[in-house]
Image (cartoon, one colour):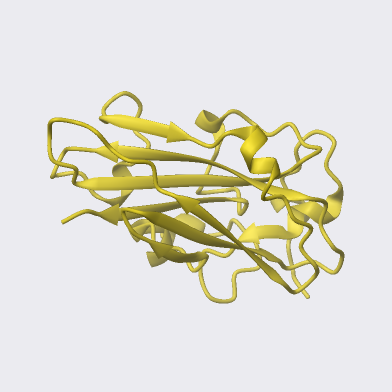
Length: 176
């Protein structure tokens, strides 16, 4: 069903191999390979195929199981970044220290949305975008999420790598 190389599989501590096949599809036909990932237009625009909806009120992303076995219970860990700089574009979301606000997921709350994903199936995660309170105009909302299992100890969010980990996604919303 897929041609993922062993070097492309990034497992967290305590994860089963089948969980590496639960990914965020970046583009149509994505099989989880990291080759040329950062050169895809969906990557550059931060509009991945897995992004179903992104408004100032909610975000919906879809995880896909491209493997042949059901996954363990999968959760979505995430961050929202709020930006008041008009000149920032899609790729500027996760530059440390230059944005006006941040919100992260709550691991205990995330457990309530955990689900095993059957092979060849998708699972939607729907999140409420936190309210933004700041004296300056909001221009951009950035989202970054990473799939994990309830058994894993995933890396720190600063180490999430959209360019090489198919279980990480980023999205950008330009607020007009």
